[in-house]
Amino acid sequence: MMAGSATLDHSERTAAAPVDQDVLIVGAGISGIGMAVHLQMNCPDRSFALVERRANLGGTWDLFRYPGIRSDSDMHTLGFIFEPWKHEKSIADGPSILAYLNRIVDERHIRDHIRFNRKVVGADWSSAEARWTVTLEDDAGATTTTTARWLYLGSGYYDYDEPYDAHFPGREDFAGQIVHPQFWPKDFDYAGKKVVVIGSGATAVTIVPSMTERGDGKGAAHVTMLQRTPTWYAIRPAKDGIANFLRKILPEKLAYSITRFKNIRLQDIVFRRAREKPEKVADFLTKKLKQALGDKYDPVAFTPPYNPWDQRLCLVPDADFFEAMKAGQASVVTDHIERFDRTGIQLKSGGHLDADIIITATGLKLAVAGKIPVRVDGETVDWSQHFYYKACMFSNVPNFAAVFGYLNASWTLRADLVSEYVCRVLNHMRDTGTTVATPVLEDPSTLVEDDIFDFSSGYIQRALHIMPKSAVDMPWRLSQNYVRDRVDMRTGTIADGILTFGHARKAAASPPAELEAAE
Image 1 (spheres, rainbow, N blue to C red):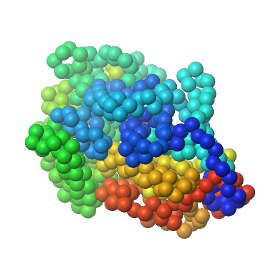
Image 2: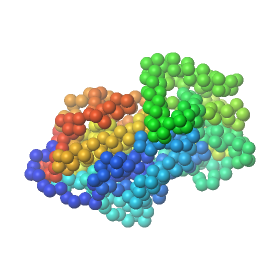
Image 3: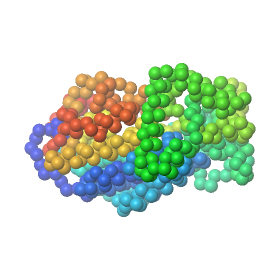
Image 4: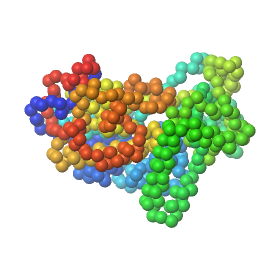
């Protein structure tokens, strides 16, 4: 069902109820930590708290523990706008990213605002009170509630509890161990084992070289990447030579800003080039692959059936994946799975891959709003019936924002923009003495709907039915154009005639047109 909006009701104004904090941030990963810092900088008059379901901060970077876990974007754009990345490596490993986040939290005294081991199991907006009541559950199953004027979701984009299950037949027959990267066993011993990694995305391409023999006797005997469809790869150095040079001759923040600007522009140029001249980009990437692989290059394994950037490019720092192949420690097989059997994987081509361990790097399962049941005046919000507004708010849902990062650029670029924008909205509410901000859409039929994601990736296509809507035109659109978004969200008018500001009001007696259309 659709949720109504407090500002669509013209009944008598009531006083806003007191709250435990002005802003409640859900999630202490990159998005949540970023919002906390932006609030400190831009809205020092607003109180805030973070709730984190895990025992540690970091989100994705604390959850994933598989070998070689690293960023698939450069840290000069995956890092925050307010905090320079100081490490020599631009493509950073998980522990380095966690150290970066922990340093920010401790230096800015944000840890005191975080309530760990608290899972949000419900969020209810009251128009009469102009506040959210959020229900939390601890590890023992006990529930408590807290109230906030604004609810900010930095809960990520995928299901923390359940990865995508490809349902391979015969799993129960396999005599070895099956592991999904999202739930990597602690102290997992794969020394001398034959490993098959199913998948061809960023996770698989990270795991394969990291599990190979490294001279310490702890590596696998051989690692085979089994892919159904080839992927486009982009090879780049793990260290950004220009960034490291600039850090030596310029003040740290200036060097970081220049590098960040450089990398944003390069990302944008490459993406636009891929969309306008895909054959040129394909030729360029193929040439680099041939140079990296030499006589190990196989067009069957490295010629995708789609254009570059129809799916996210898979980053290979220092060509480590291809170096493992040239060393004979890793290989790629392009085929379909018939079934698992006792000793490995039977392929539809008739071939067989022997395995002691099978890693199912088959992708994530997307989730909307952290799977939190969200209700507005008692009506459950069905996100698939709401339009994005300014890439972070949603039609007819008051005092609410969520972060979904860019698919064609670093996640943090959007997280920073959204944090800055929400702070602008909060300051406008302070200046106008209002307590409710709602993107009002009275007639959804006036909008022309567009594909929310112009990407063919499996994890995206599987989740389209649960995702919010995106229109052809701004502001009802989840844009993939950071350069344009940056101008709009930093300088665009806040009170644009769509984002409506008001006060606590009694709940609407009848649902708006949007709700009636959904029933």
